[in-house]
Length: 82
Image (tube, rainbow, N blue to C red; front, side, top):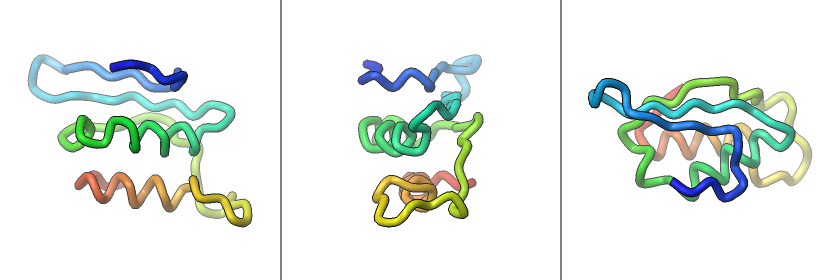
């Protein structure tokens, strides 16, 4: 996969049994996670995603489109749940 400047993600296959995506929040972590979900949407459907999301709805800033709830909804749309 191309990086698109998203440096806080690494994916791999584990014993050819499943795919794993490691996520680490950086300076603009929630925006990066949301962008990653948008770019790689189809490839993430059967993937185990784990890591440090550094995210919570209590940290919302007004009128921000890319936030914790957007990421949670994006994951749920892929059949993935927190």
